[in-house]
Image 1 (cartoon, rainbow, N blue to C red):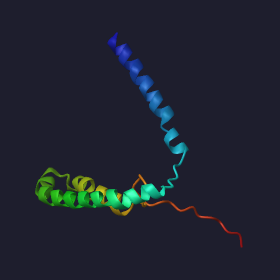
Image 2: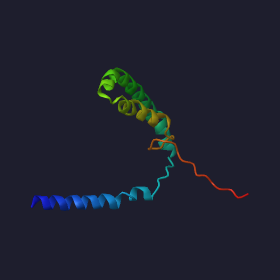
Image 3: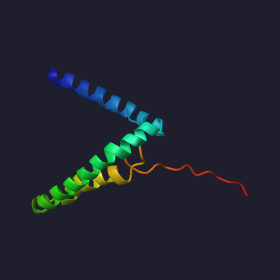
Image 4: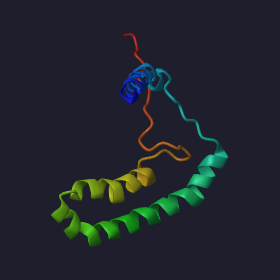
Length: 110
């Protein structure tokens, strides 16, 4: 009885995941931050993220011997250093997502 319920539940879950996975790609989000968001980002968020990057780098250096022994130095580097650094330096001012804003390329006719 539980096997049948488990199978039905797994089939339903799989169908839902497959059906709703494309919805995330359907609408691209264009961020246009307000002046308040840019000001708050410049005065509060960026200094905190810079401090997080510095502390994360220090923790990474201290834990590097253990990460090398465990074989996850690259993963630790991405989590402790690269992630906060991208959020600090590669994110547009006032945006909530890390990464560069993608510029639209317009085709010109000659």
